[in-house]
Image 1 (cartoon, rainbow, N blue to C red):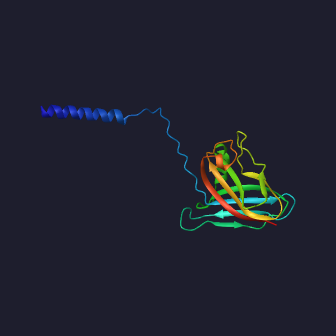
Image 2 (cartoon, rainbow, N blue to C red):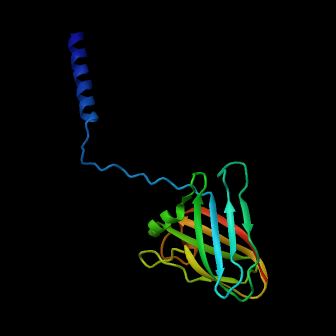
Length: 186
């Protein structure tokens, strides 16, 4: 009787393995979209009426490592001027550097750049380029300065924001990178 019970249990176990080991080949594999590594955010501001191009750069080559990002601003913005802006994000842990901006543009419905002014800085940002559904993407934009002032200019890239939105406060999503620059207009 023991051999019979063991044979039945073995048959049941083997049958269970056969049915659970086989699966339908009709199931599509899940596509994994790995989160991009962003080490560098660069904003280039080109004056429309002559003058110096200004670059704002944050570079954090060790990512979440112990070293703080190196944040630089190449100079002061001119008062009462207009600039054409472009933002780029890179992964400089690879050689050559991987231009993540290309992926952001390709996946435009899933990304948006936000620009926030603080501390009395007299600046407006508008004229953003749009995604494929007519909502703000923000890889290119215009900056208009007012009277001399200083303050902060924060640039954030948000992944999967709610679009349209009125700004970063109601966009939701996840922040891929956010950098605050100390800016002076003179």
